[in-house]
Image 1 (cartoon, helix red, strand yellow):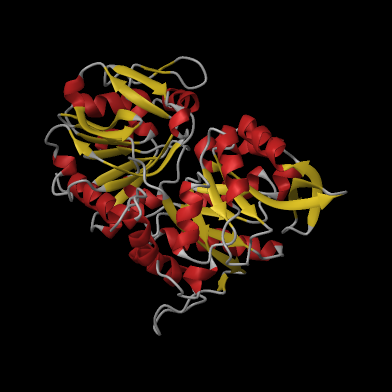
Image 2 (cartoon, rainbow over the protein chains, first blue to last red; image 1 turned 135 degrees about the vertical axis):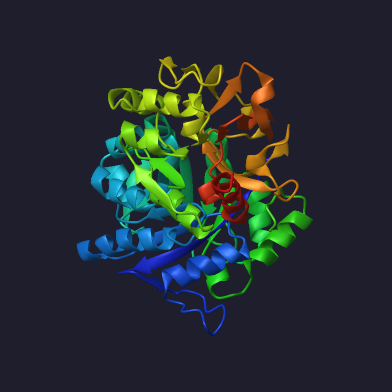
Length: 256
Length: 204
């Protein structure tokens, strides 16, 4: 039986992890290689590196960094953030990334999804999606945001995910902005709606504060994977603790 | 030369190479037919589409070199698309003739979405042994490996099946016939279990 995936996400700026966890005194919290190695040992099922570098130089460092990490880490890595062109995606996949996550650039130029899927296959092509609940004139809609969640697009979440699936996305990472950073739990309703609407896997992101939240999103939220940043980075819970909890509640989980 | 990994422009080979290095085996990346002829152990990795991959192998005269390698009884390991390409025929974006090493077809997952099953089949799933295989020797029982694929192989002869994996129903997750071995999953992404499999191959 396919297990549900637990995925730590590391924000990387110019080659350094931002907000990395200090697992032990001897682990450099800013060093992506050390962090990735630690997460591998802890039983993470995949890793996500999210590039928050604003500069072109920062992006070049990211490709080099992926190569360096993949020399030591034998697990799938997805890279997201700032991928604008097929060349950007190619550089990261050639460096060893298993998948690339396309976000703002895919909204501005949807054919980018098709191009990446054509070259590297659907399995390597992830749609990253910042979604927010927006209420206007008393009516709530779920809207796609771009540029790090700063700019609304007027595009409806449910329309965009179906289009992205048609274009060749093989997975969706749904980041619910309304829940992100709250540690109050994932947006269960939105995750379930998205997961039900597409035939490709859905990774829930935004809001994880406890193992119970992950249980909810993997069961009621119908997510195929749960992504989290701060609860792992700050050491609130280890991957192992989360997985033990989920397995104890009947979720199919890979234990190491 | 212990292990040769074939580069035909379809995959990141570095992670496969580094995984072999991690288990103490030097692996070289090769790209020409004559290099295949000199190889003792050949690894055919692969991501991407069946059609492009088989076309590239034929254009560069690599397909016949792979068949020569296999027919000489030398060790062969296919990974993911490298397994699928062994079939007679693949049905990704039309119908395409494969290498024909393992009689059978490569077909898209036909899973019941009512069960909440998604395609691609992506993530960690368990292996159930169907026969003894040196490639999979000494693995922990019920161990999980990493899969990412939308298509799977259906061999004509069930005797080649080394393991099956359950996704709504069982599908073939690895095969072995004499010197020919191939996995649908990615050993190079499967942490400790995957490294053990690569060590087994390098140690044969």
